[in-house]
Amino acid sequence: MNKYYNIDDILTDGQKIPVVFQLPVPGMGYLEHERSSSSGIKQGARIELPLWLAEMLAIGGISDELPTGFITVSAPAPFNNKVLNALSADPGSVDLRAQSMQFYKFAERWLAMTGDNALLDTVMDTFKARAAIVHDHAHNTRSALMTDRSEFLGTLDDTEIKLFKAAQEASKDLKRWTTMKK
Image 1: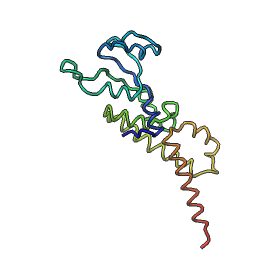
Image 2: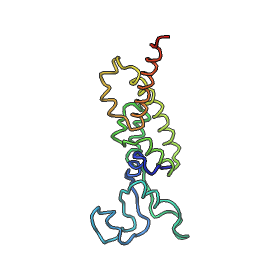
Image 3: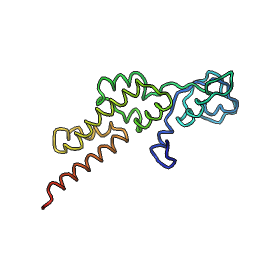
Image 4: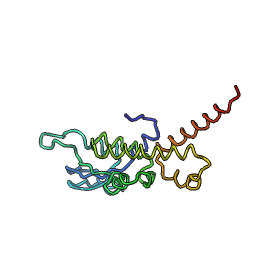
């Protein structure tokens, strides 16, 4: 469930989803042309809508004649086959930040819409593998990992950055605790 004032949820809601309109929609041409337009959207028009709007238009039946929503959705760029194959092959090699700054939150919302079990497995395996790498970088501050740390941090999505900071703080706390005088 989205939290109204959570900036991560707001940014996730703004992610673009490719859609195809199943009905003509008069007076909404500005969604298609991204400028003031009094024309409508034609049936079969392909455009990108923010996740929050695509979610609303994709759910529910409109009538008995059209039991689906106003639109059909296609997989957004971060979840296309090329990215998913790369994640399956080597999760650490993919720049998740370039795909989406809120990759995991976006995946969570997309999975809630689609229920794609293959995507769920890929995202879970990716998170597990990348969490181990994040953990290594957070705890090994003076190792060979240091040379590529800034490059590595630039590929993390917001969830992984929070995980990195939490692991780093835990490591510092552990060092302080173990060096305390008794």
